[in-house]
Length: 391
Image 1: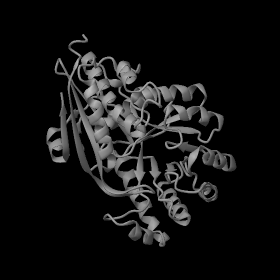
Image 2 (image 1 turned 90 degrees about the horizontal axis):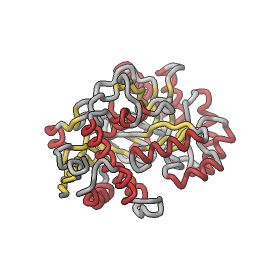
Image 3 (image 1 turned 135 degrees about the horizontal axis):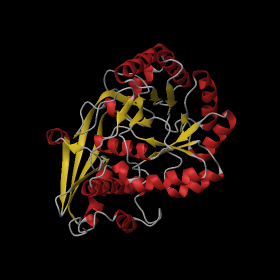
Image 4 (image 1 turned 30 degrees about the horizontal axis):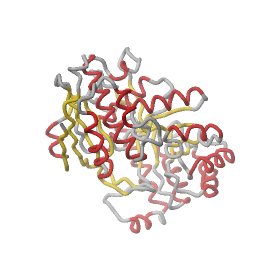
């Protein structure tokens, strides 16, 4: 089996996909998303699909790591992980290194599922009927019709009546896709704007919608505490990284008693002991790429379960490859009880086939072997900006 499963080549393609909105947050203003699509081909012709971030540094890191896969047994994912990094200290590239590894590891999972004829969720111990996974749709800090500079956007925040457009946008998405969960991406530019925006969303979506707010740690702790109290009437499902570091989150959580989630303060194994000694978040919102792949995410989730910490899945604007991976993960882990982040509704096009539509705010887990998705080569050709073949 191992000879046929030997990795023969790795193909990397950077792709740029158009978004159906201008995404504004405290970190980004963007109208496109860039990803690295990975194809790992085995000696028997099996092709495993993976993806990771498409920023130039992550693309370059993936290209540096990919040659170490050549000649390896694709079924030995644990061996590949040991060869990359036995500890956080071994990984000198930080989050970029883990993200590069995660994309390649994902391709090995897909290849394994295809060789065994099993969907990814079954490889993780969750066979049975195809489940549907509820999704959380991201919303920008402000509804724009075209890209704009930060200076131009700042003028929007002075007119609180403009928050009504966010409510209208969310209501339209709820009507079209059935979403019952939304993540409002605060720009951490105006507390008055954030309060008005959350009020507009609650008014447009009704009392039963789950509405999260995520300023990406943009507020100082004291300001975040004051903002949280002002948001209380609008019943946010959780406050995601309202301020910086575990200490700040712990202070806010203790001061307000509100539910706090993080995908910034607990993102690698050595963060876990400190996060347990000083609990700053009720929910560890794990990103597959930050945690170094599926196995790293599962290790985090298993540790969280031991200590009674809730886990959820973080995602943003990824291709259908990573979306499929997140769907399988959510389906295989009953501890994931809340809607999974997903920006698929905002992609103007995708590069895969095999994903079903979003209905009633949820998406079916693909049922084919591995991830259950295939590349759309015409779409790939249109989206590719850079390519490498490693043999």
